[in-house]
Image (cartoon, rainbow, N blue to C red; front, side, top):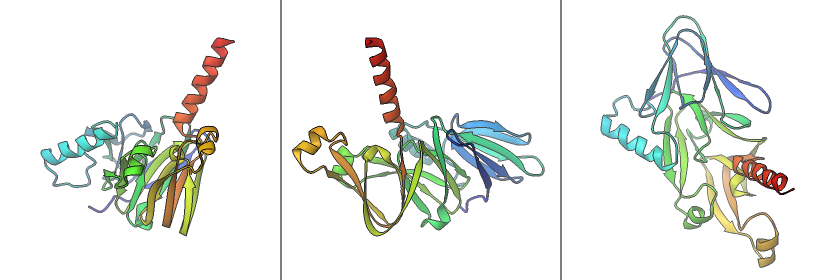
Length: 244
């Protein structure tokens, strides 16, 4: 299914939202609870499945929903469709402070792999699936575990991450990243995990036991402040305040 062609605008600085503009009949699919506001004429419906396969039966939808459950996501996605006249807008916000990244999948080999909670919304026709990392080391030690999300199609998709987003273009080079800071990577990038060398570095380095290793040709997106780190800092600050 060819993706709907949608226009968009990213609004805000440190706590962003994406405003999607729909023509009559166009639709956008989003995570449940992501919608901030929508203009008159846009209707929404919660469905089991992303709508990328119009001929998918109930068993196919149940299978797709089951795979989403493995990532800890909701079984359902919300479909927003413009049923009125003219151009109308609907906006979506990330659940945590950070940055929204627009991805034109048609320019990225029609596929992007991202961490399991990064997806925010996408044009109807985008397939939102999961992929199992084939590397045993990546599965046991990577921040994303065995399961990653795969976004496929030829339209616009939007992911969210914490803090500032840095986009790296690899042309045969290797990039090593804190596993929690890795947000997404395009097709053509090989993903693996490597142990930090040296016992002293493992124990006292403060960077964890492993790093994500990305190599090949394509793009990599890195976040400066994963929500897990932010929550840990807030928790430690709260404990310190209580103890004092």
